Figure 1 (tube, protein in one colour):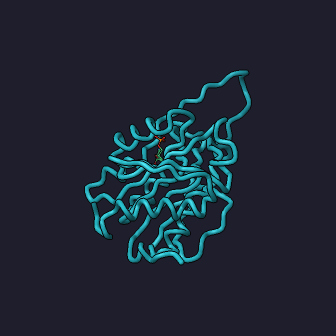
Figure 2: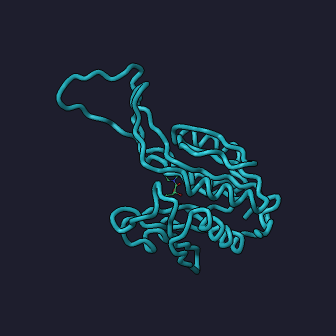
Figure 3: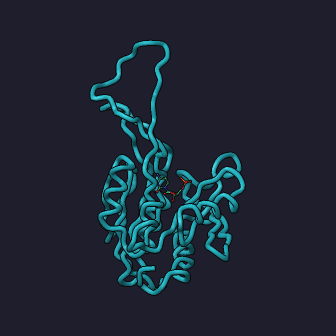
Length: 222
Ligand code: C5P
C-alpha cells in the first residue's frame, strides 16, 4: 500500500518529446516515449497529488485522475507549464534544444542539392520554472552519455534545481532509457546522492518520489 504522502500537493510534470515545425508538414523531434513522465504522473496521483501532465506528442494513455495538456513545441510547453507550475515541478520532457528560426509557411520544395537549416535556441522550461519568484520544488532529469554524476551535479547548480535524476543514454545504456519500460537513475541533490538500480519505470517513479518527499518541505513553497 502506497502512502498518501502527496495529499493536496499540486504537481506539474512535463513528458515526452517536443516537435519543432520546419514547415506545415515536417518537424524536428527525438525518440522520447514519455514513459518516465507518465509513470511519475500516475505514481504522484496514487499518493494523493493533483497532477497536471504537460505532454508532447506520445502514444500513451492518460493515467486515471490526471489533467493532461497536449502540446507540440517547446514554446507551447513553456506556456502551459507557466500557467500552473504547481508546488512540485518535474521536468521529464526531452525538450528540443533548438527550433527552426522561422518555420516556412508552405511546404518546403525540393531544390538544390544542399540547403541550410538555421536553428534558434529554445527556452529552458526547467530553468525558467526554477527561476520563478514563487518557485515550486524543482526536479530535473539529465540524460548523459558519460560522466553521469559530474554532469548532473553541474546541471543541478546551473539550473538552480532542488534535485536531479540522472540516467545513462547511448551505447552503455542497453535495456533502459528512451522507449524502454526500465531505467536506472542516479538521484542527486546538494549534499547527497542515491543510486536507484535498474527497475520498471512504474516502480522507479515511486522511488524517486520517496526522495522528493524526503527533501521537500511539507506542502509549502520553497
Ligand atoms: O540541459 P539539459 O537539456 O540536459 O537538461 C535536461 C533537463 O532540463 C530535463 O529535466 C529537461 O526536461 C529540462 N529541459 C527543459 N527545457 C529545455 C531543455 C531541457 O525543461 N529547453
